[in-house]
Image (cartoon, rainbow, N blue to C red; front, side, top):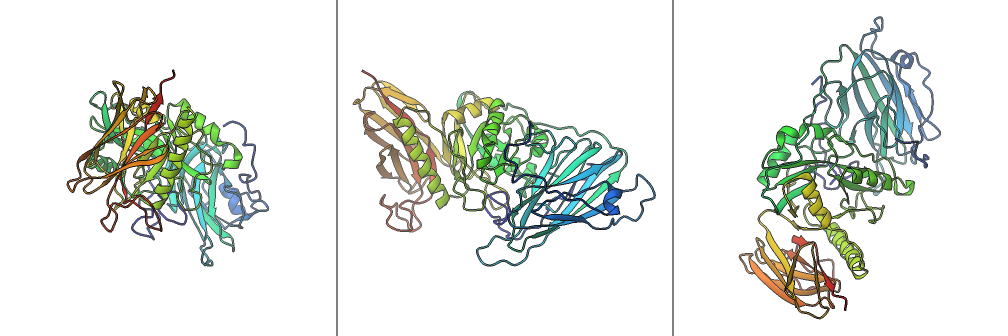
Length: 559
């Protein structure tokens, strides 16, 4: 969830509401044709009539939506061609400006590093009115085409400065050649106050030898597993490579401490962290590359990307570009998962529909009303799909942890996989052979047995329509909890767990009465009661979720 409820890239604010803009200092040496709906992505066009812009080889562009200008060059030592050069760009963006403003930067031969810092004004606004928030990133000489090859980094609104060179870059940015040509700084005015947004960008080109090439260390696609078994994993995690405060080392350590077998790296709108996970993986921890794609109409997880693969985010639902990037992820064997679809922050609520999704994140971090809504929507779609004999989308739960005190693995997925490998874990998640747990202390087993046959979570049980089916749930780790058994007709059984949190619940149904059965295990409510199953006010009828399963599908045999 977002590091800052106003600009950000994701939905849970950290403990500190006014964090420093950049916890990690910038590192020093360390598509197809243009989209068919360009209105919100058109380059802002205007010229810069200053000698400083000419001297640096930097130009800004603007259009009717805004203006840009260059301040005098702060570097007075321009008598040598290879002297570091600095220029400050300023401009005004009005309310209603395009989503992305592209500032071209002419990079000459011999540049070893590009360093950028930026800022913008934050005038007071009336209560309930969004204030200014502006993201930043950079594309190289290969261009800014949607889905193209020019992407070199993005830090959203989390950093005020960054640098990139051949051998190293600020987290969120990609090390690599600083080739001559037209690069583009990209501003993303996330929110613009009624007064508009005044921005300033300072660019320094540093000349010199390029230094050694960067060597990526991608994680292996296999860890030491237990064969066909249940594996625990958190598929939504952030590091300093986007708006998280944890180093990758800290995330890996947190995953191990939480008893996880695998994690997926999902920094916002960048693949830069992929290249550092290799030494942090191991026989006991599988690390899978991914990305959280934060569009202006909702966020989605691209899980199981090829190492180093980048997925573009610069589109809205009405642009009809989402299917193109779904196909990109699917070609890599990955999964497309809408994230926190009911998050109340700007641009977080899901507007693309679920038809092309492989699963849905219904539980994001500590349990909230947003998650309650997500589960209700998922369950409704589940009922419609299975009553109609169509395929269904599994539920997922992830921590979306950015920094302490957010808990890695709260919640996580417990998936039945053939082994602890990238492909096997993704296959298990795709098939819905998984359940969601708030921690490794919670254990659960759900089965359905009838007519001499047996099925588990994510599987189908085909029996005569009126043959008795015994549903059995064994659970531990939820003291005083409440078990709910839910079908396409709603909750049909509820039972309390003892004080020690361990128990077994058995309930009987038939395939003619239930198209599926799934289980929820809830904590007691704040007042200590389990609830009556009938909400008559703002309080939920049950306490927070402790565990949630995907369904067992019940099919009636055809005569």
